[in-house]
Amino acid sequence: MASADLIRAVRRNDKQAEQNIRIQLQNYGIDSAQIDEMARANTPARVFKVYAPQSGVVTTLEAADGMYLQPDSIALTLSDMSSVWLMVDVFEQDIARLSKNSDVLASFEHLPGQVLEGRIDYIYPELDAVTRTLPVRLHFDNSEGVLRPNMFGRVTIIPSEMRRAVTIPASALIRTGSSDRVILQTEEGTFQPRMVTPGLTGRFGGGSRTEILQGLEAGEEVVTSAQFLIDSESSLSAGVARMSSAQDGPIWVNGTVTNFDAETNSVTIRHDAIEELQWPAMETTFAVRANLKNHAFQYDRPIEFAISKGSDKRFSLVDLRDVKDQASKTAPADTVGAVEK
Image (cartoon, rainbow, N blue to C red; front, top):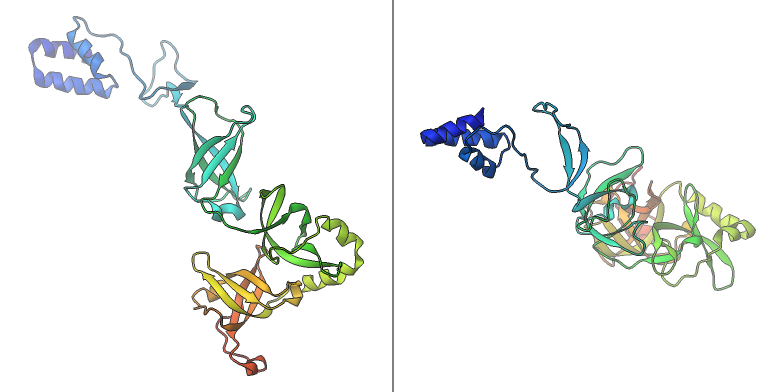
């Protein structure tokens, strides 16, 4: 027994043997204080204490009194509950807004009125194939012990960068399988449908509101009871039919580039009215398709560009060419990119 060998080495004053036995006992998980106590004892120790490397809560207990443990046996599981992980599933369309420095807030039913602050600990690299969500692991301080394993909560992840956006009441958006529309009230007191590209929906700016990425400008008036109006106003049918047919192929429009964002690979264009979409002349931001990614956009230069609707229901820039003079309207100009099919 190592304890007996240690006592004999101490009595012989054999420092080398004593050092070797001490290392052997440390490998068994015995701390230095207990080894010193064994060295001073007159009889070999029959039992020794094993101290956990951390304090915590026993979550599983596999060992029993008098039980023989194999080297690979798990005697007990000890969990440190001073800090906890919270797993959340982020929808696929919101992944681009995630960043490690985003603010995280969480609320739980057993803590009414209390909001806990956390941080993003790890963003998993792979989506769940069934739910089409991305697992994200959050870290929360739990020094007060208010959070327990297997609890459910409501989490809000706030992007690190804020931006201004055009929003409408969520009830004003008419969602269909192929497109999204709103009903606008014109100056003549009539109603006109318009195809839009919605973004985030949440309780911001007062009540439930939806961000509009394309199709609206700030200050335009939309009808909140749009679903009722589109059923009751037969005059809207023709406009809706025109918008539906516009989704089949690219739409060519004239305009000028006002901004290009290389980080998001998007271009902002001040364009003429687009009759197929019932869009007025305004400034719109389009994602740039891969075939135009390396194109050098020139500001305030007249161009003729083509947009097409993608699987994300957002209109993207798929082709463009310069409008050099009046003759270019009858003779085709040099094509910079190819229409993506």
